Amino acid sequence: MKKKIALALVAALAATTVMAGCGSKNEDATSDSKKEGAKTEASSDSVTDGGTTFTVGFDAEYPPYGYMDDDGEYTGFDLELAQAVCDIEGWTLVKKPINWDSKDMELNSGSIDCIWNGFTMNGREDDYTFSNPYVDNSQVIVVAEDSGIEKLSDLAGKTVGVQAASAALDLLQSDEEGGQKELADTFAALNEFADYNTAFTELQAGALDALAIDVGVAKYQLNSRGDGFKILDETLNTEQYAIGFKKGNTELCDKVNADLQKLANDGTVTELAEKYEIADMVTLKAE
Image 1 (cartoon, rainbow, N blue to C red):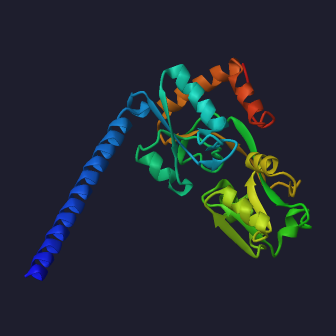
Image 2: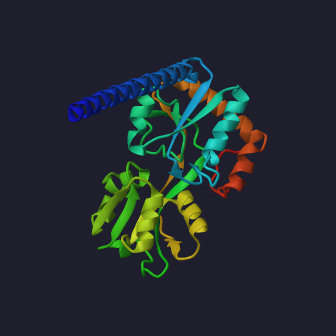
């Protein structure tokens, strides 16, 4: 009899536990629903639709333009410049880290108002409404100092890394005028990475022979990592950075362009360029 009572108690406790677990899941679902509702409400306040929330999509692993600092805060030249624009307009800046492969989906869905993070405009002019260019950039090759690689032709038979969906990758896959597919065809392999921090780790470990990368990012990585790497003198190309808005969103683009010129005129652009050590690359000048 005692055995039957004990079994009954165990069964009752098990049922109570299951019911409690189901209640917990329902509460979590309600909480998630509320969070999702808050996100939807925030997105409806977008400056694109006449609101006051300016959401910038950026690659969080792309210093000095956008990255997470030692305090766990997102910062960088582009993000500080975006904040300065918001200060002029009275907007609230939302910094939204995105998967670079998904940048077009984020922009076209209205999840972000622009792509602002060392975004190359060359070859993409028909796909976005771009701001005025603000940085002159080059695609370069980074190698270990003791690699024996001195020029682009030395990359034949080597394993080269590049960021997925990047301008460097587009360049190395293009056989149009100015493209570098012919060079890439000499590589043993062209490996894609989600971000350049990971790629540099692979280069340091010897799993890669070289990296194709934007010069500004390359300089930042070399400065932060110390000795052991070098940038080849021979570049892959030169290009320009601009802010990418959804095709046809000229109203927002024109407004940001005007604000950027104000920031160039009052010295803010120069101050930030010097802070992030890209003063020799910034083309936005005072009038």
